[in-house]
Length: 246
Image 1 (tube, helix red, strand yellow):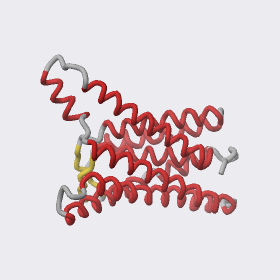
Image 2: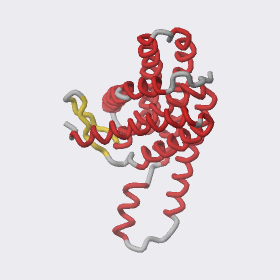
Image 3: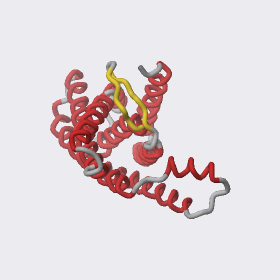
């Protein structure tokens, strides 16, 4: 079972993202988009930096083996939903593209660093073990990021446009806003896992083992993608009356 400290830090980070985003939108709507895009780029790069570390993560008493970067994906999906909620589909695609370029530049910087001669072998072994990424894994990460973000943004936008006229009552606002966040995030996590693990590991292990890993990781990430719903409700409540773009 994860420590209380972990969940306190996780919730605190999510609360900071939500409140900061809502405040930026309310006080400076145009600048808010820039702040959101910057935060998304930081989160995406951070998630990929943490990918090499494998951990055991427990959900409802069931243990899952995940890369550490997976615990950041609820942050990125929440941030993507907040951008889409206020600025619409096209602006969210642009933010996702900027975040991907930032991550791509990080990979370029790592490759540049590998071209320099290390001072000590000990530090070089650590550096290679943590930052060296196989080309196939990099391709899988790129494809899964593009596919899952496209599905996430497209699905959220579709449900948002359908639901926005039906949110007059407070209970409808909570129900429908949570629906667009929950459905889009869950579907994007399914797509992310299917694309990434198929490209990265197909043919390197028995199909039954690969399917087991895909299923386990998919279930864990779908569950994690839903725990940010109360924070999206908070964001939705704090930004009532703010212009929504389609």
